[in-house]
Amino acid sequence: MQLKTSSGRINKPAVLVARAIFPEVLQTLQQHFEVTSNQADVLWNPEQLAFAAKGVAGILTTGSERIDAALLAACPDLKICANMAVGYNNFDVAAMTTARVVATNTPDVLTETTADFGFALILAAARRMTEGEHFLRAGLWNRWRYDMLAGAEVHGTTLGILGMGRIGQAIAKRGAHGFGMRVIYHNRSRLDAVTEGVCAASFVSKQDLLQQADHLILVLPYSTESHHAIGVAELAQMKPTATLVNIARGGIVDDVALAAALKAGALAAAGLDVFEGEPRVHPDLLTLPNVVLTPHIASATLRTRRAMAQLAAANLIGFLLHGKALTPLNALQ
Ligand code: DGY
Image 1 (cartoon, helix red, strand yellow):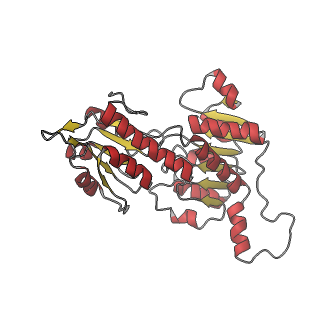
Image 2 (image 1 turned 180 degrees about the vertical axis):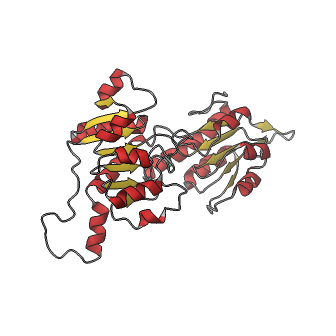
């Protein structure tokens, strides 16, 4: 899609990089495109994003930029939005398809890293690691006591997984093969028998999942269907000794209901990397000792974040220069 002018100069397509990214990835993009970048990492509102995106053929987004009908109407030259995230609830894919704008995400490159972090949250919440650290830092550790900060067992217990895509499967393998756990899962569709075997995971109803899991981890995409998939009714079905971990998206858990359950002792502990309305965190969660809170960093290793940025850039290059995105979410090519 490179255009030659009458003087023989190549006109590169224009792209917008909506947030700060690795300088070397930006340089790669600059070799192929006229790039407008936001390396200052200013958080744009929708109008500012639409203004910056006027006339560009592609945008490299992160999960923070909403691409919807209004943005698409304001940017008629847009051909592709490449999200630097596997989750894409910031995209209105139906509106993008109607506007014939390709949507891409970054699957696979973050699977193992994100699964590691999910497991770390299970361990940290169940074994009260941050609570222990706060206790120590506050100077409260003055002797050994038989039940001091005693938490829940992880190995040999039942791991429940809600959402059994790539990351869910990677967590299942860690639980089954690394920690000797019985792994149960619930998903919109059941895995084939071979994949279930590799993951050593059994399909159960959502109700059985809630009732049987000692540690329940959420790895499903956010959508209107999964909004508050874990709310008052679901929390009431869980064991009071259980741990709940959310590394998927804020809004899948009703944070107010969760805080109330943790406060009342209806649930032992939680580990949360994502929040409703993040980066705000519900104040009730901030005051509770039995919840481990992290700022949406499950995929945050430098190697993985670099791979995500490179894949997003490769999607822009692949589609705008060669007509083929690597990891499309809609079938427009
Ligand atoms: C993703 O890839 O969806 C993560 O949540 C962003 O880091």
